[in-house]
Length: 290
Image (cartoon, rainbow, N blue to C red; front, side):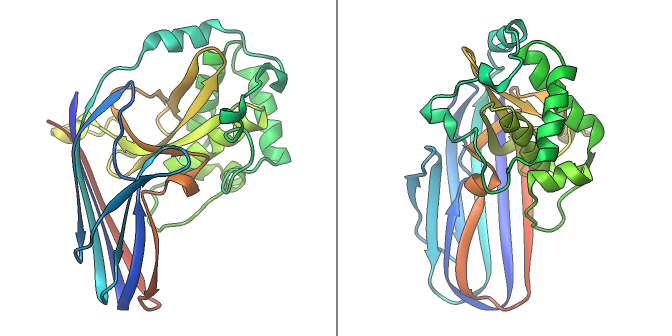
């Protein structure tokens, strides 16, 4: 499936800003599920872009606007070809017995960082207790466990669109049982890590066929950047699932970056001088089939 992605972010400042330095994680990268095509990033005021790789290997574009400005716009336009995932991996996960304790999972050094606490995902007694209950309630195989945790979040947490840019921890989401796709992904990562299971946060986009015609939306969270979770299954590898939609990740999903949580993969992150006390933000995301 060939998809076209348009992601525009505009910042408005009440007073002139300068020395506006930003990192962008907006580029779909090549994986088993996707093959990126053309990518064009436009910055206004105009700025020179350079690129590098972060600690996880994500592609990062950076720029600095030195001149004074009251508005900053970043437009990323990309094409990507997606394919259905390898279902044999998912089938193997359903065939593998899930360990009765965290000792069943012994992550190597490269996965250990996805098993420990991070900025927005810190284990606490409440998350640990719910994780233990889920471990015994949702099935006996790895596939049943992953799907069961996703279903628990989907059925017990109320989705709310993010109207302001706020940072919420997994513990806060667990307590109030509501949040955005970002929050639900943090919570699922928290449940897995409480049991010693490596889990990572994925940032990207979701294509909803209903938005290409007069029909209704088929998925939640397709008109903005989306987030989901990947869980590492011993002997199988990383398997993606979306707790916001209670859906295994397939060709409708386009990943842009992965990390321990949102802090590692924010689509745009930066700093500036000035800008005044009042600032506003507009984000427009469109994912369409070509």
